[in-house]
Figure 1 (cartoon, rainbow, N blue to C red):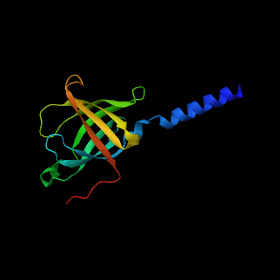
Figure 2: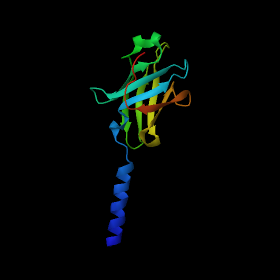
Figure 3: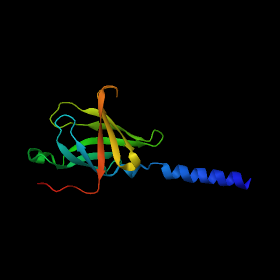
Figure 4: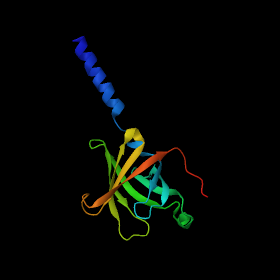
Length: 139
């Protein structure tokens, strides 16, 4: 009996160690634009309504400095059962329309996989964002 209790306790503790918390997404991420290949950083933060948003905080393109501060992703909500952030909307700068999005955190929190798509996720693209400690300085 004591052994069973110990195994159950260890299982519960281990599961909680690997469980992702909703705010684990918060932070600064480096990404490369899949179309233009320009580099940028995005900050994911919690909006007033409790969803998660992302804005541009750095770019290596001086022509894109006017996009710093642009909120391009809104409405992400955390689904603990699926262990992903869903229901997001992305507005891609320079493109018409709004795309649906979902996000997964992988690699022990070092990488964020963001999938943007039209209609169903089959018709989309996944972009890896790498977590960084701070915003890079503008040149």
